Image 1 (spheres, rainbow, N blue to C red):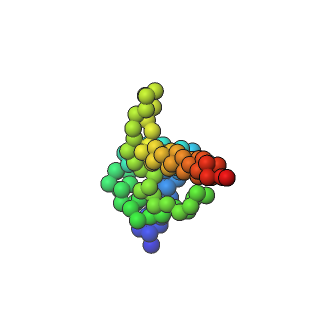
Image 2: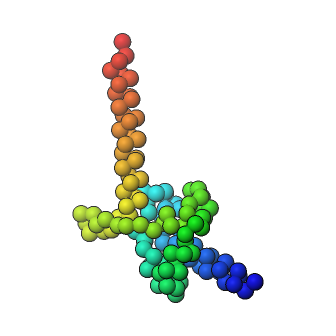
Image 3: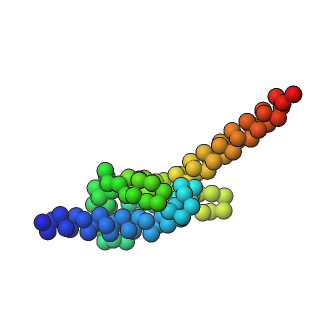
Length: 116
């Protein structure tokens, strides 16, 4: 019973730490994801990276934005022109937004062009 309780406490600590790092995601969506690596969470909660990897594998969290695997919140980063790191997930979300806007704009232009 003690092992089950310890596992629950570990999952909870790791989940809370991840959510603190990804607060902007919770408030604004994927385009505001922050770059995050296992080591950051491991150092914050005082566990080894391999433990964080095991804890986040096949575990899901219910957020106001939907249900996500804990692994979803970790990812690579890319430096932008001003020297800030951007999460690859945030970049993908921004690209999707631009594509959606372009599609909507194309439909509007096409509608007006085909109008008699």
